[in-house]
Length: 279
Image 1 (tube, rainbow, N blue to C red):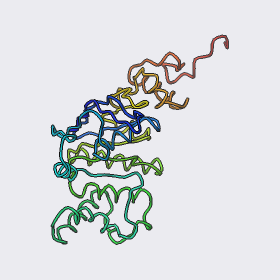
Image 2 (cartoon, rainbow, N blue to C red):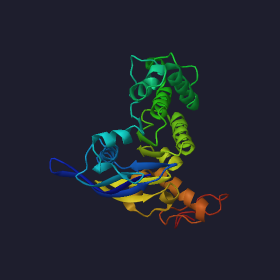
Image 3 (tube, rainbow, N blue to C red):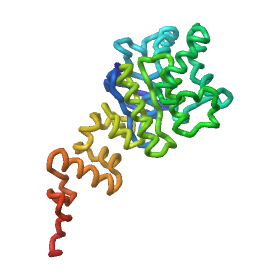
Image 4 (cartoon, rainbow, N blue to C red):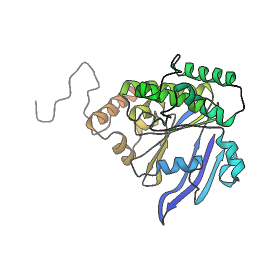
C-alpha cells in the first residue's frame, strides 16, 4: 500500500500539484488520470522519488519514504518495478539480456538462476521462445510485454506504469491491461498507472484519481465513475457524444434510469422516443 499525504510540488515558484492525498492499495490497479498539464506525471515522479515534494509525506507500507536517507530509499526502490511509456528497451540487447538486466544489477545470482527467472517471467507474459530476438524484431505489443517482464523480474511489491498502452491498437491495449491486472492480483502488488486510455480506465480502474490543474478533483472506481455528477470529470472522460451515449446506456443497464439530457427508450425493442411536436 502507498499513502500520499498532502503532497505539494512547485517549480520556479509555480505550483504544479497541491494538497494531493490518496491511498493506493495492494492487489489493485490504481489509476492517475487527467489532461496534459494536470500534474499526474509530477505526482507519480514524487511517489517514486524522482522529485522531492515541497510538502507532505509518501508512505510505502507505513514507511515514510520522504523522510528516508539515500540508502533507505534505495532499499524501497529495489522493490519497485517500472514500465515506461516507450518501453525503454536497450536496442543493443536481445530480449533475454533486457529482462536479465535488473537481475545483473541488483543480485549476485548465478547465470543459470537468472536465466530461469527470465524464462519464468517471459512465460508469464506469453513470450516463450523470443529470448534471442532484438527489440527491432518485435511488434509494439511484444515490446510492452518484454518491458513488463523486465519490470516484474525482481518480484517487486510496487509496479509503476506510465501510459502502458501508448501507441498500441485497441485490441493489444486490452491484452496489456489484462496482463497488468492479472499480475497485480497474482503477486498482490500495489500498481500505479498513469493513463489517458479510457478503455484502461473502465477495465482495470479499481481506484481512480482524477487530477485537474494540480488538484485532486475526484476519486473513486470504474463502477462509480459511470454515476459521477462531477462536471469536469464527465467532460474529460465522456468528451464525445458517443461516449456520453455509452455512459447513459450503462446507467440504463445498471439502474433503469438515464441522464436527463439523454432521450433513450426504456424498452430496447422500441425506437427512439419521438421529438416533441414530431408526431
